Length: 134
Length: 226
Image (cartoon, rainbow over all chains, first blue to last red; front, side, top):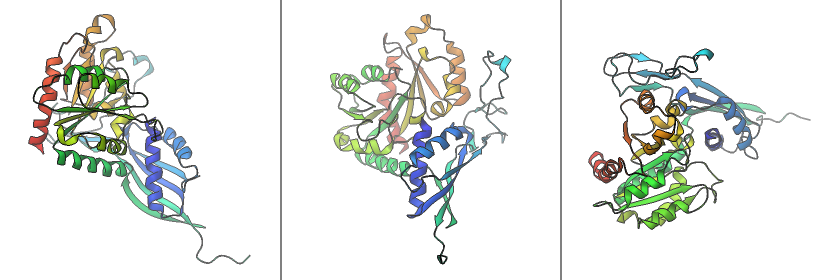
């Protein structure tokens, strides 16, 4: 469901920057920590964009992998859990991410990448400066 | 027709953040500390507020209730003589599954902000969307009940990461549900290392003193960091 809310925000942002022109595409950067499903986002984007300048626009989603850093020991790592093998699904430690520093085990690590939810750019359709003779 | 590329480089939720900042400004101006309380539906937010805010000494508290429909929660809060405003997201907001900054802004005029030290915003029950939308709060907390399962921090890390306090409620149900409390606390720590947790049963009263103490201390703590 939050893809619906986010789609509305994307459409609003794109229209605000389109300055009355039709939006042909929207390039979006989404961090892995935002728990956004790109397919779901594209689906809702199509619906929310109806009857707006974004109608029929393409949504290009770039997923930005997560990256953490620890200011205490300088450790850098990807907090995503290891992919869970089917047979390991009952292992309680499966699917546990690492937001605590794996080096010094202290809390307070910073997210360097992975929190993005950014409209990077849009493409607008504009009539040619000189209309061709018909 | 030809296409022109326009660089935007803007957070998609910027518009919400701008309104959240305006709310925050108004809250600060009125001297009220604001807590955004989130959880899944039925985790016990309203019951915790009833237990937590009734006859709270030294703190003038108010509540903003967010629900898709109905005034049941606001009626319960009004019954403990705490000023409350009900915000329904189905009326004019399209039945949204969360509160956003604009909805909260629309309710500000109905709240006696100048007469409050603490405002608790009870968000719509949902473990996903509310985490995305800041409303101008000073603190974000969540309630998780033992009936929901110990894997929830792993499934909804965005929510668990957004909070400074996780109230673990319905401890009285532990003998009746399959719930590994240690595993749950470890999962919370894995996604939000060092976050404060509080073990509570709003029904039996276990941990309620600690909860009331937390609520009592919020305004002073927020003023100290402002």
